[in-house]
Length: 101
Image (cartoon, rainbow, N blue to C red; front, side):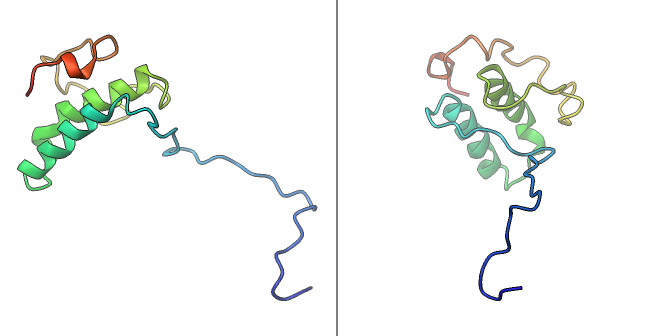
């Protein structure tokens, strides 16, 4: 045993990824406008996320459609039935072409 040095990792140390919560960063800002609209909504509503849930869904759809997070069912994300009347072509459109909401 040696104090002050890291332990030896040659004895079968294995790295395991986290179950959830780890996803690539949006280095190219592909979903930045969706994120900004969601954060603006949170600011306007005093951090109350309920009126902003449709924007949250749009942001997550953008991330999933561009491979920035693993696709998951809306039910698992707590967003089933949210924003049924919102724009559904997030994967195809460019956020800069969307009307200002």
